[in-house]
Length: 114
Length: 116
Image (cartoon, rainbow over all chains, first blue to last red; front, side, top):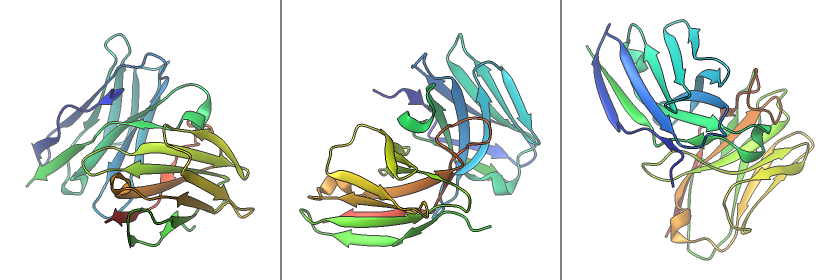
Protein backbone atom coordinates (compact mmCIF):
# COMPACT_ATOMS: atom_id res chain seq x y z
CA UNK A 1 0.00 0.00 0.00
CA UNK A 2 1.75 3.13 -1.25
CA UNK A 3 1.22 6.07 1.05
CA UNK A 4 3.06 8.54 -1.20
CA UNK A 5 2.30 8.41 -4.91
CA UNK A 6 3.98 10.09 -7.83
CA UNK A 7 1.83 9.06 -10.75
CA UNK A 8 4.00 10.46 -13.53
CA UNK A 9 7.11 8.30 -14.05
CA UNK A 10 8.53 10.93 -16.40
CA UNK A 11 7.98 14.51 -17.49
CA UNK A 12 9.52 16.41 -20.39
CA UNK A 13 9.68 20.23 -20.27
CA UNK A 14 11.29 22.79 -22.53
CA UNK A 15 14.15 24.84 -21.11
CA UNK A 16 12.91 28.14 -19.68
CA UNK A 17 9.35 26.91 -19.12
CA UNK A 18 7.73 25.88 -15.84
CA UNK A 19 8.11 22.30 -14.57
CA UNK A 20 5.32 21.03 -12.31
CA UNK A 21 5.83 17.78 -10.45
CA UNK A 22 2.92 16.29 -8.56
CA UNK A 23 2.62 14.09 -5.49
CA UNK A 24 -0.39 12.61 -3.69
CA UNK A 25 -0.50 11.03 -0.25
CA UNK A 26 -3.00 8.89 1.62
CA UNK A 27 -1.77 9.06 5.23
CA UNK A 28 -3.51 11.96 6.99
CA UNK A 29 -0.94 11.74 9.80
CA UNK A 30 1.82 13.12 7.57
CA UNK A 31 2.73 16.62 8.73
CA UNK A 32 5.99 17.37 6.94
CA UNK A 33 6.80 17.02 3.26
CA UNK A 34 10.04 17.19 1.35
CA UNK A 35 11.32 17.07 -2.20
CA UNK A 36 14.60 15.42 -3.10
CA UNK A 37 16.47 15.46 -6.40
CA UNK A 38 18.64 12.56 -7.54
CA UNK A 39 21.26 12.39 -10.27
CA UNK A 40 22.54 8.99 -11.46
CA UNK A 41 25.24 7.49 -9.20
CA UNK A 42 24.57 10.08 -6.48
CA UNK A 43 22.42 10.05 -3.36
CA UNK A 44 19.21 12.10 -3.17
CA UNK A 45 19.80 15.82 -2.52
CA UNK A 46 17.39 17.79 -0.34
CA UNK A 47 15.63 20.55 -2.30
CA UNK A 48 12.79 22.08 -0.34
CA UNK A 49 10.31 21.19 2.39
CA UNK A 50 6.96 22.33 3.75
CA UNK A 51 5.17 21.89 7.03
CA UNK A 52 1.48 21.01 7.08
CA UNK A 53 0.70 24.34 8.75
CA UNK A 54 1.68 26.13 5.55
CA UNK A 55 0.33 25.95 2.01
CA UNK A 56 3.33 27.36 0.17
CA UNK A 57 7.08 27.55 0.55
CA UNK A 58 9.43 29.22 -1.88
CA UNK A 59 13.20 29.00 -2.34
CA UNK A 60 14.61 30.66 -5.41
CA UNK A 61 13.34 28.90 -8.52
CA UNK A 62 11.61 26.20 -6.44
CA UNK A 63 8.15 26.50 -4.89
CA UNK A 64 6.22 23.76 -3.14
CA UNK A 65 2.45 23.97 -2.76
CA UNK A 66 0.46 21.89 -0.29
CA UNK A 67 -3.28 21.22 -0.51
CA UNK A 68 -4.12 19.31 2.67
CA UNK A 69 -7.78 18.79 1.87
CA UNK A 70 -6.83 17.12 -1.41
CA UNK A 71 -3.78 15.42 0.13
CA UNK A 72 -1.76 16.77 -2.76
CA UNK A 73 1.49 18.65 -3.12
CA UNK A 74 3.35 19.97 -6.11
CA UNK A 75 6.82 21.27 -6.88
CA UNK A 76 7.14 24.15 -9.34
CA UNK A 77 10.47 24.94 -10.98
CA UNK A 78 10.64 28.26 -12.81
CA UNK A 79 12.43 28.70 -15.12
CA UNK A 80 13.53 25.16 -15.87
CA UNK A 81 17.22 24.71 -16.62
CA UNK A 82 19.17 21.81 -18.20
CA UNK A 83 20.76 21.01 -14.81
CA UNK A 84 17.29 20.32 -13.43
CA UNK A 85 17.15 17.08 -15.41
CA UNK A 86 17.07 14.42 -12.68
CA UNK A 87 14.72 12.11 -10.77
CA UNK A 88 12.60 13.97 -8.22
CA UNK A 89 11.29 12.21 -5.12
CA UNK A 90 8.46 13.40 -2.94
CA UNK A 91 8.78 12.30 0.72
CA UNK A 92 6.68 12.67 3.84
CA UNK A 93 6.95 12.08 7.58
CA UNK A 94 4.64 11.72 10.55
CA UNK A 95 5.01 13.64 13.82
CA UNK A 96 7.57 12.11 16.14
CA UNK A 97 10.68 12.85 14.20
CA UNK A 98 12.85 10.43 12.36
CA UNK A 99 11.90 7.33 14.29
CA UNK A 100 9.49 6.40 11.51
CA UNK A 101 11.77 7.63 8.77
CA UNK A 102 10.75 9.29 5.55
CA UNK A 103 8.17 7.69 3.25
CA UNK A 104 9.12 8.22 -0.39
CA UNK A 105 7.23 8.10 -3.66
CA UNK A 106 8.64 6.20 -6.64
CA UNK A 107 9.98 9.34 -8.26
CA UNK A 108 9.42 11.36 -11.44
CA UNK A 109 12.15 11.60 -14.06
CA UNK A 110 12.25 15.22 -15.23
CA UNK A 111 13.85 15.84 -18.62
CA UNK A 112 14.59 19.43 -19.62
CA UNK A 113 14.82 19.78 -23.36
CA UNK A 114 16.83 22.60 -25.00
CA UNK B 1 32.92 20.09 5.12
CA UNK B 2 32.90 16.38 4.23
CA UNK B 3 29.60 14.94 3.08
CA UNK B 4 28.16 11.50 3.75
CA UNK B 5 30.37 8.72 2.42
CA UNK B 6 29.56 5.03 1.97
CA UNK B 7 31.63 1.94 1.27
CA UNK B 8 31.90 -0.15 -0.73
CA UNK B 9 30.40 1.33 -3.90
CA UNK B 10 29.39 -2.02 -5.33
CA UNK B 11 29.19 -5.50 -3.85
CA UNK B 12 28.22 -8.92 -5.16
CA UNK B 13 27.20 -11.63 -2.70
CA UNK B 14 25.69 -15.09 -2.87
CA UNK B 15 22.32 -16.02 -1.39
CA UNK B 16 22.70 -17.05 2.27
CA UNK B 17 25.83 -15.00 2.88
CA UNK B 18 26.18 -12.04 5.22
CA UNK B 19 27.15 -8.47 4.29
CA UNK B 20 28.29 -5.33 6.12
CA UNK B 21 27.88 -1.88 4.61
CA UNK B 22 29.52 1.21 6.07
CA UNK B 23 28.61 4.86 6.34
CA UNK B 24 30.45 7.95 7.58
CA UNK B 25 28.11 10.76 8.53
CA UNK B 26 28.54 14.40 7.64
CA UNK B 27 30.62 16.38 10.12
CA UNK B 28 28.56 17.41 13.15
CA UNK B 29 25.70 15.00 12.41
CA UNK B 30 24.78 12.59 15.23
CA UNK B 31 21.93 10.71 13.54
CA UNK B 32 22.15 8.12 10.79
CA UNK B 33 19.28 6.54 8.87
CA UNK B 34 19.46 3.66 6.40
CA UNK B 35 17.22 3.16 3.39
CA UNK B 36 16.82 0.42 0.78
CA UNK B 37 16.01 1.47 -2.78
CA UNK B 38 14.95 -1.32 -5.12
CA UNK B 39 15.02 -0.75 -8.86
CA UNK B 40 12.24 1.60 -9.97
CA UNK B 41 11.14 2.33 -6.41
CA UNK B 42 11.66 5.12 -3.93
CA UNK B 43 13.92 4.63 -0.91
CA UNK B 44 12.34 2.59 1.89
CA UNK B 45 13.23 3.28 5.54
CA UNK B 46 15.13 0.47 7.31
CA UNK B 47 16.10 2.03 10.65
CA UNK B 48 17.64 5.05 12.36
CA UNK B 49 20.44 5.33 14.89
CA UNK B 50 20.77 8.21 17.31
CA UNK B 51 23.52 8.39 19.94
CA UNK B 52 24.52 4.78 19.25
CA UNK B 53 21.06 3.34 19.79
CA UNK B 54 18.34 2.24 17.37
CA UNK B 55 15.82 5.07 17.44
CA UNK B 56 13.23 3.71 15.03
CA UNK B 57 12.70 0.90 12.54
CA UNK B 58 10.75 0.32 9.34
CA UNK B 59 9.15 -2.89 8.15
CA UNK B 60 12.31 -4.97 7.78
CA UNK B 61 13.05 -8.37 9.37
CA UNK B 62 15.56 -8.81 12.22
CA UNK B 63 18.23 -10.12 9.85
CA UNK B 64 18.72 -6.43 9.02
CA UNK B 65 20.71 -4.98 11.92
CA UNK B 66 22.92 -1.99 12.51
CA UNK B 67 25.44 -0.26 14.69
CA UNK B 68 26.44 3.31 15.34
CA UNK B 69 29.86 4.14 16.71
CA UNK B 70 30.99 6.97 19.05
CA UNK B 71 32.18 8.97 16.02
CA UNK B 72 28.61 8.61 14.63
CA UNK B 73 29.65 6.42 11.72
CA UNK B 74 27.39 3.44 11.14
CA UNK B 75 27.15 -0.08 9.77
CA UNK B 76 24.28 -1.96 8.20
CA UNK B 77 24.48 -5.75 8.50
CA UNK B 78 22.31 -8.13 6.56
CA UNK B 79 22.35 -11.85 7.39
CA UNK B 80 21.09 -14.78 5.31
CA UNK B 81 20.97 -12.74 2.12
CA UNK B 82 18.04 -13.29 -0.23
CA UNK B 83 17.76 -12.45 -3.92
CA UNK B 84 15.24 -9.68 -3.09
CA UNK B 85 17.89 -7.92 -0.99
CA UNK B 86 19.50 -6.79 -4.25
CA UNK B 87 19.13 -3.01 -4.12
CA UNK B 88 20.85 0.33 -3.59
CA UNK B 89 21.42 0.93 0.12
CA UNK B 90 21.44 4.58 1.11
CA UNK B 91 22.73 6.11 4.29
CA UNK B 92 21.54 9.54 5.42
CA UNK B 93 22.86 11.68 8.26
CA UNK B 94 21.26 14.61 10.06
CA UNK B 95 21.83 17.01 12.95
CA UNK B 96 19.26 15.16 15.02
CA UNK B 97 16.43 12.63 14.82
CA UNK B 98 13.86 15.29 13.96
CA UNK B 99 12.90 15.71 10.32
CA UNK B 100 11.94 19.37 10.26
CA UNK B 101 13.43 22.77 10.90
CA UNK B 102 16.95 22.32 9.63
CA UNK B 103 17.28 18.65 10.54
CA UNK B 104 16.87 17.42 6.99
CA UNK B 105 18.59 14.20 6.03
CA UNK B 106 21.65 14.33 3.78
CA UNK B 107 22.24 11.21 1.72
CA UNK B 108 25.38 9.41 0.66
CA UNK B 109 25.85 7.98 -2.86
CA UNK B 110 24.79 4.50 -1.78
CA UNK B 111 26.12 0.96 -2.01
CA UNK B 112 24.81 -1.19 -4.85
CA UNK B 113 24.33 -4.75 -3.53
CA UNK B 114 23.71 -7.61 -5.92
CA UNK B 115 22.72 -11.01 -4.52
CA UNK B 116 23.09 -13.99 -6.88
